[in-house]
Length: 268
Image (cartoon, rainbow, N blue to C red; front, top):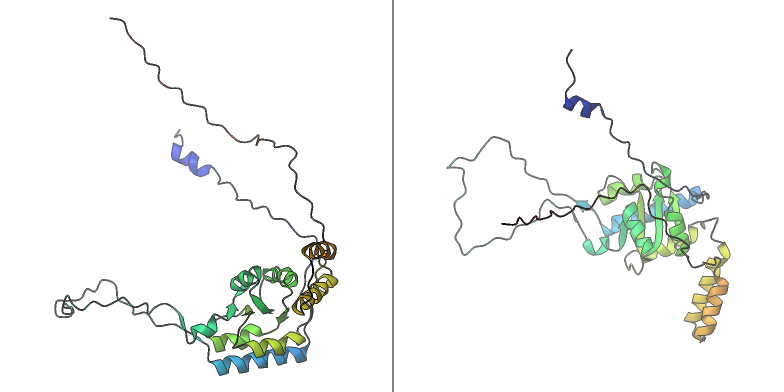
């Protein structure tokens, strides 16, 4: 009878299945529906502005060299003199026709998310063709807490991807102080429907805008009054976190301490 070797026993052992824990929110967030007339107005406004600006992403083609073919002595380029030094050009990297205008936009879900977290955007538009749909659900509370108008526009990627030279445009954001797209933001903002988040009341954002208008008008208030009003207007009362007891991890395996070698002194 042939006994299986040690290698066979190792292969028979199944690898542990990786487990990832995630917390599900008890609230369901959805984008507010956009009317069909407003959808066509937004798409036409964006198409006209982007075509007028001429912003597009360009890629330079890479030269493909066949494997196994080496240049002969006749094909080798002549050595250049020591005085002429050429800097390496990055021709393979993607480039935009107008980098200054590109900096005023946030293209893609990741870039829009970073812009909302840093409170740098004034308008956010999301395409409804994102699959799975929960990839853009986190943009709803981010836009709501920062008072940024945001909505979901159908066929946004199909309409703008070709103009920008991209494959997809799943999310598009306009940065604050964007001079080129200032008229576009002003025209689209009144059409955007308000967002509804269960744990954020609609009155809190209105009060925040009224307070901002009052401060801009020049009304002077004391710091104590401002702090009291801010606490009264906040819908949530946060309590400090208190740690009652710290319990060590019982499953942690502690390595035994290595004992030093005892030196035995032999008597002569």
